[in-house]
Structures are given as structure tokens and as C-alpha cells.
Length: 542
Image 1 (cartoon, rainbow, N blue to C red):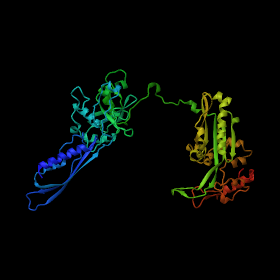
Image 2 (image 1 turned 45 degrees about the horizontal axis):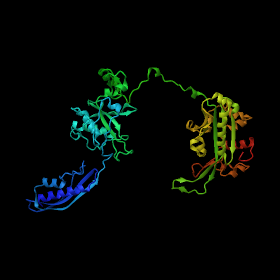
Image 3 (image 1 turned 90 degrees about the vertical axis):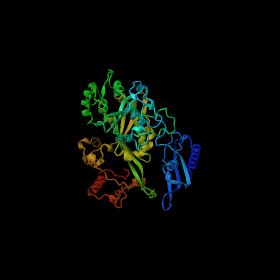
């Protein structure tokens, strides 16, 4: 096969390729299998070789070069005889190519308040290599009057190393770039028209000259209309900060003179000597800016004295449930076992007034609609407190009523939040005055059982329970942790029973174990007997 034949064949490939590709970035993959015969050997042997052409991104798919892999191979292997060589097959693969994180220009114009300072060189790139152009502009400053043009600098591929780094570059790949090129790169961002450190180089203490880059987000820019710049992708544009003093002088001081700025914490000094003294200590500290308090605000002290005042009212509540066995003990997806259905049957609450104990009260309600009753009580309390004369005189501003449950988030809230649509509204009667309910889980602050917590409180301080007891014996019985047959109360009919269940029924099979926790302690058994004999007992519901 002659050289003219191969040249003609390559021209056909180029023409066919140009007609096939679309107006998108492409990758070419040339795969050819050629039967080549090598001369000047004793035994003629056939060498079958597969050639995969180098995959190169074409900047303009309509200007494909003719230096295909087949031609390159032919020119490099002239020692093969042409008269007995032939092409077995040739395949050209053309694929759409979308580089990671976009392939169009990442250029973003500077904000007006930045560009007016003439302190930042923003190279107007037409590709996704704005980071490389910014570094090149810092290392090889433009010698003409057009530092924004890429033609004012050497091409980055000739002066920088960026192997295995994808572009547009990710922020966490900049460290790798620093190692490849021996650079020290600091990044700064704009927040509320202030320039702040974004990422400081690990090599700031070395002899490397720092390169300071301003990072701009492209997500809100109108410069890029390509669909590749979607909201799901946050791309960045980089520009070289040529004059840090000019960029930050107005931000840090008002005198307008040149300042010597610490790139790390952005503190400024009047001379280079003072800056060098500062850097000795600053480089050994954390990566953050130091902002000292002003003379008028240098002492930290408590100011919100209103938070130390007691709230006018507080509600302490609890509820109990019937543990109804589920009809089916089957598991959902083999994980959750349907064991019991918890139905609230009783709610009790104590309303405590901090300034007038005559307004304090205790209420208990047991019925199917106990939760609805409790919600209605909360509504009435909120409304009555707004209309109460003393509350309006003593608490002109809005205030909250704490509603305290022990283990609210773990259990009680499952029943109460079914009526949560009412709690989302404020109860306001007169303008400027409203009462809001604030539900609090006391277990989050005191993670112990109520029995243990109450044991820390001396009997003299249990004034609320004492007020409802006639004798010391009754007081001692009511302040002790009771014994309740949780699993035995599985229906409303249990409350009508006039006799206590046997001690074997005083258990709680909470962990679904083979041996449920039963009452075997002699003190608990004696407590039940004493309670029944001393306090009035009609049925399990009283």
C-alpha cells in the first residue's frame, strides 16, 4: 500500500468525522489494525498491531487535523515494507465529551467596588482554566498595558505543572497543585463587601513567595449561560490580588495611607518591621482572624437580667397509657415487632403560680378523650392569663408558660403533638400581649428517673405534696415511687376490678424478654399492702 493511498484514506476519515460531529466538545479515538510485513528477515512473519490514537480534546471540532494515528505510525515505521502491507480494518469512534464540572468559560467580572481599587488582576479567560491564568499572571506579570488579556502572559501549559488535576479546579486540589509547582497560594473570598481569608496555604512559613487569589463564585453570574453551569454545581473564578494594601486599606482603616497587612489574620501595620514582628507570633496560631473587643466593650458580663425572673406560671404534667396487645405480632419487613398499642387514658397537671399561690391548682382527668381535655385546659389557661388583671399589670410584654414533662420527647409528645396545629398559633387577645406555651422535656436537663430525682429533695421542701396530705404516714406513702402493673392494664375493663392483681401481674415486659421484670422485692410487696389498707381503695381506677 503506497503512501498516497494512506494519505487519501486519512483525508476521507477527516471529512467523514467533520460531517459526523456536532457543535460540542468531542474526543476522537482512532483504532486501527494493520497487517505489516517487516523485511530483511529470514522468516517472514506477520505483526498484528492495534493502535489506539491519543485522545485529545478538540477545541474546534470543525478543524480536525490530518495527523491521525495511522499517519503517525506510518511515518515512524518506514522500515516496514509498503508493497505487501494492507489495512485489515479501521474504526473511528466519535463521542460527545463533557469535562467534569463544565467545559465553558468560568470568567466572572469583578464587582464594581473591587474593580475601582485597581488592586486585582482579572484575566479574561475563555476556558475553564482561570485558576492557572491567575497563577501565571502572578508569576509572570504583564509588561504591557493590558494585564487582563491572556496574550500578555506565557501559556500555562509551558510554565506550570497540573498533571492529574481536573479543571475547573476544586478547592481541595489546590494543595496538590502547590506541591507540584512549589508555590504558596492563599485564597480570599468576599462576604458582605469585605474581603476575608478563605484558605491559607500550609507553606506560608516557607521561603515561597505567597500568591494571593480572590475567589468568586460563578453560580450567580450572568456571564455563563451554558446549561453546564447549573445550580447543582458551584464553580469558582480566580483572580490575582496584586495589591493587598490597596484592596483592604479602606476596609481596615480610614486614613487611606499604605498599610502593611498580615495575609493571615488581616491585621495591618504602619511599617514592614512591625509586620515582621507580628508574623513571628501570628504564624504559630490558629487559622483565624483576631478581632479584639473595643475599649467600651472589653468586659464580658451578664446583661439579660430579665431571664433571671421567674415566669408567672408553669405547668407540670404527666400522662399514663393503656398497653393494649396488638392483634398481630407480625414484624414489618422483619425488623419492627408490633407488640402493644399505647392509648392514653389519664392526664394530670399542676399549675404553679410564682407570685400568688392561691392561683395554683391541680387537676386530673381519666377518660378516652384525656388528651383533648388537656389541650382544652391549656387553651383556657392561656386565655384566662391574658385577661387576668395581675398578669397584665405585672407582665406587660409577652411571656411564655413552660409545660414540663419528664421524657417528653421520648414518649408523651407522641400523644400531644397530634394536636400540634393549635400550638403553632399564638394566643393573643390585646395587641402587644400574648401568651405562648413552651414545652420542655425535663429529662434533657436531669437524665434520671423521677424516683431518684425526688430522693435528692428534702421532705421539708416537698411543700406541694405536703399540702395535700393529712398525716405523715400518708405523706410518706405518696412521696415514695409507686408500684404499677403496667402490662396488666391492657383494657378499660381493668379499672373496674375491685381487687388488686396478684403480685405476679405486677410486671413490665418492656424488653420483650423471656423473663419479664416482676415484683419480687419484699419492700414493694409491703408497700402495696400498706397502701391498700391505709388509703381508700374502691377499684383499680381510683
